[in-house]
Image 1 (cartoon, rainbow, N blue to C red):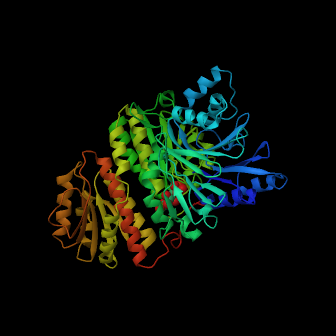
Image 2 (image 1 turned 30 degrees about the vertical axis):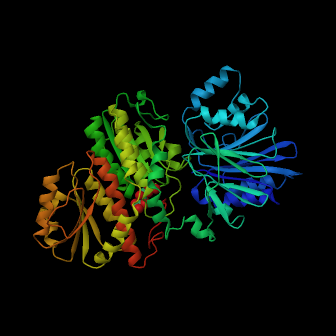
Image 3 (image 1 turned 45 degrees about the vertical axis):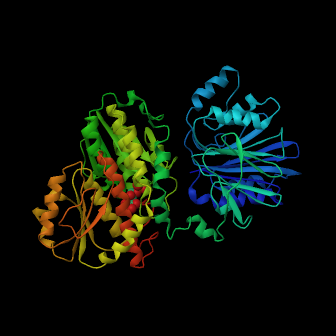
Length: 589
Ligand code: F6R
């Protein structure tokens, strides 16, 4: 996910911009750039890849009288990670950096092209600077406001222009942006780490706020000037990167609602699902789908199997890549081969993708890392837009994988579940009281001889995922089981020291799952039920919201299972972000 910095009046502009971007590196990026108004000149320097490449280029750049500067790290969404697509984007006399997505950029681009305005990048961002210059008639702020009126979508924007070399124009809607000052020095960043040490307090802008900086910060909302709401900045950079959370995994669990918004932006629309990266012809002649993935991504694939087969009526199988790879599967050309991978580098998944391509199948990747091996290999890719995931145990990437599969099944079945998708995003917001309850509950689940997570239908893959999360970071044995399978063997393990996490949906097979829980309860297993309806025979109960859509239940239960694993692991004193024996990207067989 992209990062933004900006400044005015600092002693060493290069240092602030580069060091600031370094603080945002952890968010992941594939190109970077800065733009500076130097005396009367606008200088834009960009480089593909890591920040060292940009630093190398900047060694030969001398600023004479730098006034204002902006910087950006870009995580490609619209257009490949090239130098042209990197930010800042410049026009004739201005430059812009932007996080988020301009949803109506194609319509604006067409409008400007009809006026013979040329575009050089494939990005949505370029329309901001072109539109600004189109509207400019001697008053930069007026032109900037017109731009904001015209663009739809999510954004954090910084814009500088030679027309007013002492100003930085800014706006925020849906993507974070922070502004701070220290006497006559002004700073911007998309998260607070770059500002630490430069200012003691900052204004975390709210959606709809915009303005400019000259010798003070002018902040507006609804076209009225408003006052700054300053909050103290944290003093510790490492904890700032973790956003004050104890572990990256915890931060990533909390980030899920934002990440899912990003994932569905421009895709989940009132008119139905849109994927810029797909066209309906791609699916012509497809009668089967095989989904290939490993670990958590495989669990997402299993959810996809239920959704795609039920809604899109296409026979779908989810396969563990390391198995599929060596079993000489029957691959027919009417099969769409989908691979799911957070990293895009998982060796087994990649090899199955190559195998499918050799067999002449159409291939589609659901992946979080653009330009990764899997993305390069697949015919088409839907990027997950989860941002970099630091915790080894996957959380937010899983959320975006499931959401993308849900949207894909809507796309293929022409089903419109716009409202339900938004409701599902909403329930992933972590409720502080719920987290507290899980923290307290976790102390009762530290011993015993293991866990069973049980569920039916889409809650079965969630049971597998809940169990995997727990074992990865707590090192306690846990298994996911289809609830109906318990009586075919595993129930032999039931006693008070067996912990069962029951995922009890109100919308899918409620009575049947309830009976399965009863079977376990009558054998004295210790049961934690997660449901919107309370049941008597449970030891512990976590209530979720009532809803008529099982996917909404799914996403709320997902967060609860993640928090439970986290709290059990923390109580056991484990390093949640770096569990023993595990690596984030498994590039070996
Ligand atoms: C578990 C986890 C792993 C990965 C698996 C595949 O929390 O993260 O099970 O899901 O190694 O990795 P990707 O998705 O990068 O292909």
